[in-house]
Image (tube, rainbow, N blue to C red):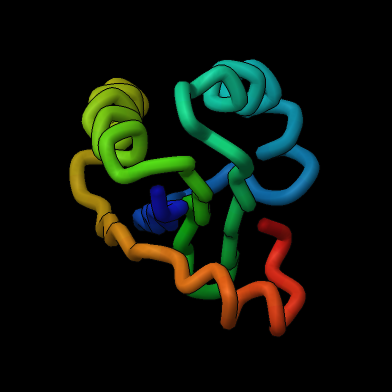
Length: 101
């Protein structure tokens, strides 16, 4: 089975950095329990007003299930438009370049 990367980004007015950490600690703990999730990297760019994350899932089905649930979560927070992409991971090449697989 191939690991799958899920990338999600959306426009945000903040919060940023420490305020984001404070506001989203519970959300991070909830996301950490998602079936098949190996890790998530939280992303934020105050200059472009984009936030989101890069997720590594054990399989595509878990990534797709998470995306459906996360879409509802984001909509409840007022985020109605976002981009998401799924990618299969080439493990051998990624290991050469020190990916945390």
